[in-house]
Image (cartoon, rainbow, N blue to C red; front, side, top):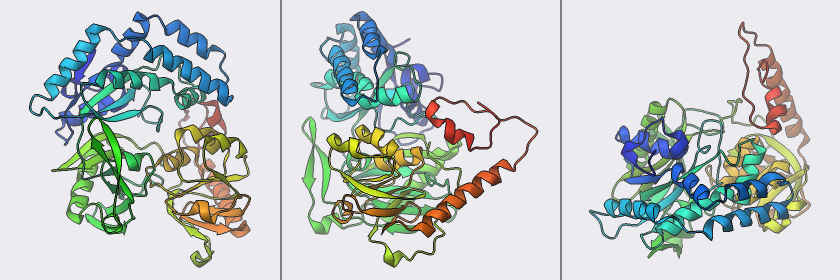
Length: 485
């Protein structure tokens, strides 16, 4: 088993050593999709490292009796494990292998910088989305490459990653981590693309675009342009042009935020012809995998696909439109419908992680943008509303996984929705109403009940069972048309 693999050496038998993200890059390169060149430090290197320096048993002991619901205890365990990794030295043998591969990557370009990304061996697999659980580092060169690889290893034990694995019954010591080292595309425009609607599964390509590197969109710190394309006619059916206040660019060995003037920020980010060209690439990748794909892309001299993974959030309810007669004119706030459903509750503003404990099961979480550290509070909330973000922001992805309504990119939710205000969130239309709209809420309850009855009426001669990785999912699975676990 090798410590270093180039993308063109990776195949679909390498999940245990390259992780889902790494394998997907290898497969796309083999089919000549436009992927920036790069290589992988395999999970063998990570496992060899923790065994060579003798910290495997120490990590086990730290995690043994950990209560992940105790935030302070979880954060302390995370820091202790992170320190164990970062305060030790990588072997000279492995350092030389990683740097030798980097030198080969920059043979035709001495000024090359790279993106360093994790590829956990339980990450980006069908049915298991680890949104935001491990870290990415941009603008890296040989001076900080080794440190960035070790930071990726340590990110396997961030508080949010430990919590996610524990709640989804993944063994901490069986999950390894590979590290992707890929040429950084100095993007003029970048973003995310779904090859079909991420909530309903409808055959529409959804593209989100922003100036600069795509990190601002993935993190949810800006509200991107959104383009909706009909792939049957290759026609742009809808555009939502946002005002972007800043972009992220590389400066030296780091990334910085550069302010945009209003004239530039209001422009359409990607030209129409490039939108269609990108959508066609996305559909080709979907056809190759034979399932909907969630892709990151960049545009510089040409269009590139940076990574692709299965969409894990398509709802069984294929309808993504509300049926309520409530007038849109009565909405006090409008944003992007990012996760379907309707919920009512008490608005609770969260300005930082120290306030997460104030969220209860009757609340709507209102914030500028969510982060992975907010997931425990998001699980308690009835719905989510954010100032910033798009369909691919952390808030949107996690809300779809949790099956709760979410509206993102409202711009001024924190100014409009006061703490303690009763509100109704319509994740089908992106509208928020003051007060509890009982007709809408009753309609939603009735619709869910009808869907449950409709599914239970289907009778087959074959018993259908599901694999249940998380006890928390038992109630949701019981509502589906299956015969057992």
